[in-house]
Image 1 (tube, rainbow, N blue to C red):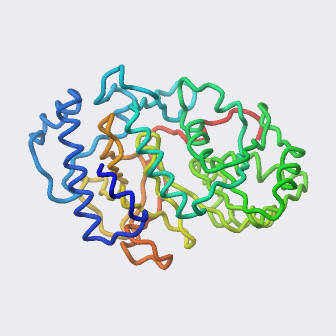
Image 2 (image 1 turned 180 degrees about the horizontal axis):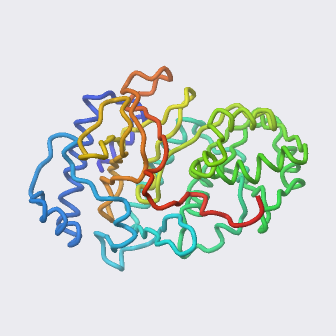
Length: 358
């Protein structure tokens, strides 16, 4: 990735300029991984795509995201690997292993910072993490949940965890934290299911009232569990507002296989593709490109994966693109909705399924 592109704001470029940039960068990534990852080379070679220069985003071949559960895919040597990240999964399920070198890890951090800063501002904020510190104690093998907490922690100054190791709400810790930062904007971060099942329900059951009216909540993952309880995004936000006064609530869509290039929700409830990433929706019947508004399988593209061939992935999620460059929030790029998981897809969630009391 050309570092000079970091001078742009994440949603600054319209269709033509963004397409030109992405196609150039993705072709460069494709060539890199063909030369450095034998498994990737064999996959494309089998389709006679090992020497193609692609002219549109839709032409780029994709790997099924589940392939990272069954194959070790990396484009760097063992000595260059500085971090191994794993996807979420319940007991007995295979997890993806994503190998990062120093350059890729640094690039992911820079891009994530650009995206989040466009929502919360350039200054770090006092941060309340709606989870337990126990999740991040093992630094050797990063889970999706632990990696998410550590990744977003860089946006906080004074950081505290809302729960103890048994996922009991630390009421005094939270009260003291809010009192110490009274009058300041506060950042909250957590995974959707944890926020709902442990934070929101605890507030509702005990009639605890924290004033979070000046806070910003960023959350992601775990929607499958909420939809199984028939909880919509709108109800989720409304109940949080009633319980705590929270008004600024932003969901995000992302995966460990493409860490850094997340898709943030805007004020109108749509997910947005930043300039470093894009989304294509494909029809399940033949993988042809779906029209805007048509539900299909989500393909995600990112220019960040330098150490592993994960720049074009077919997910196990369904969704539809609403439009491009025309969202009322003013952010340019494609904006979309995720409607759920493919019915036959393996059940998982970024909350790493905390099996305890709910």
